[in-house]
Image 1 (cartoon, helix red, strand yellow):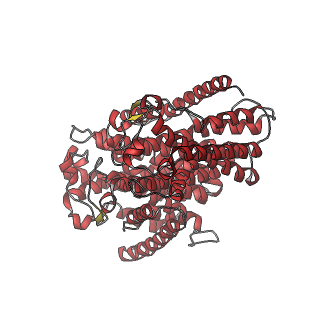
Image 2 (tube, each protein chain N blue to C red; image 1 turned 90 degrees about the vertical axis):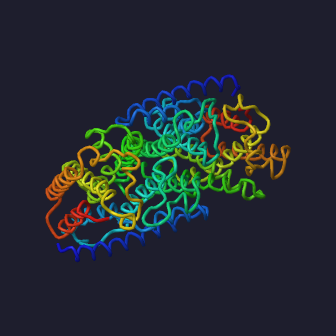
Image 3 (tube, chains in turn red, orange; image 1 turned 120 degrees about the horizontal axis):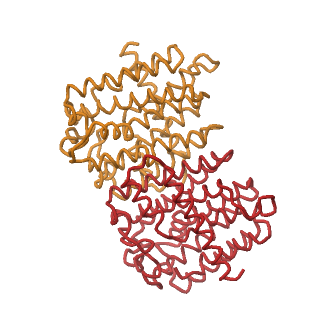
Length: 303
Length: 303
């Protein structure tokens, strides 16, 4: 698939995701005004919308040969948006003064600067709860399985573990094993879960889900190596967040373990393995091609 | 039911809840050591275990005349423990410096003092995710409904809304309507959800759930008025948390709106209405009597 064509499809899908995110947030009655503004500030503040698009396009790959080819049901769109809510909650909390203490996110002031620290903590807490509500409502017969799977990916042995290990590793000598663990938990688990959600909603079982998760973890790790590289090679304006922070904070990155050239090779190796895994797990067709092209951009990227 | 007998039954149930909480936390593999210690510090640090006991005893009231009379299945015990995890996460975040900035909880140092602020934020985040996982796993066919119902109760239009409004009301003139709203969202919603979980697991529908929720909200509001009164009349040693904080922080309480005698009358009125509601919603029998006796202690209490 040509990059220009892919970028157009991504822009269309991103817009659909954002419309649905706005609908879901506005549909919740009783959220205090200031809290809702803070949630909206972070949720609607741009972003690649990578996780929801992975969910929708994975689902598309399985249902493209069925009757509802090409269309996206409200349910898969809602589940996709729940994943974006979880990602956004994690960004809000990661940016807090007690954590990474960042002031720029998606090109705008971080939530605790635009509002205040207490509101930012609560906006994150509220987005996490809302995400699980949306998963439960949209999951149909697989609601329990979806909540459990996603909950593990973002929970204390998943994304939260990654953030804890990431903070605890600051400034101490890092090993390859530790960086791999942090990248997997902090980033790759939720990205892999995004693929898994699409497959679960399409009714797939372990024969698909297990290899697909492995491919998602590889792609997610490639994505995070790309993030580490961009932190060094890109500008804050390009990234929409503060560049050069990893080195200043003494973060555990592949660049610290093995330097830039080796990290690039690692990124390409992981990324290519992830693509092969997706190719093997999904039925051939235009939807898989689109997902593969999009997955390639997860590591071949400039922002 | 005699108070001494009730206290014995409560102690037995509390021990069973704590054993299961420990089992659930230890059963999660891959939680980083420091994060797990922080979660354990707050989760296993005492407490009345009120929410899980409400769930289990409500369930008991419905199933007492069936074959499995008196026994508690793993599922209802797990759901009950998920509610305690949600309560604990809210305490950890409420105690943070950016929120209520408290240093004593359940008679021990708050999580961010025993560990650090970042770890406390993550321990709360992790407990919330784990709670939803446990609900999803233990809910069986009603998993989706349970997660949605509980998620609403603790979400941005529930418990999180209550905390936001509570913070925003500090030091400004308060009205009765605002105090009622804060108490309902901050405290009563999760307590009502605890009763609802027991009824949902027993297979009850809206004819029971709607009036039971109303009774739970009344009891929860009576519980919170009692909390406000104790903040003024009890010592920190009695409470296991800092006494006198509400007045110092200018919190929105009934005492500020109408003074101590009127607040006491309000507490008794709400509490009695809640008891009548439970009496009407649950089948008669020893399990209901025990729940009623326990519910009376929610507002007639000295800690």
